[in-house]
Amino acid sequence: MDALSLNALSEKIVVLIELSNTIAKQKRTMVVELTLFANMFGTSERTAKEDTKC
Image (tube, rainbow, N blue to C red):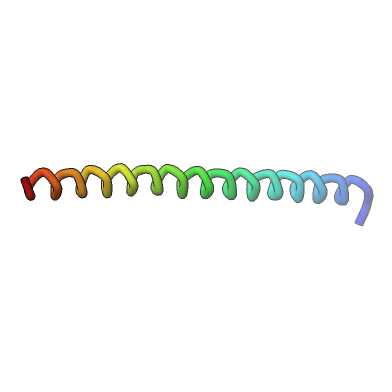
């Protein structure tokens, strides 16, 4: 492999690593958002059940 090919390959590897990191961050963000949504839904559901008990 010549130097130009190695350079191109290393640039592609860097891009793939950055893409992988971005995907991992998006997954973490999605988990947090889904958790918050689930907590809001669970809270409103519990409140509705408590309101019907009165």
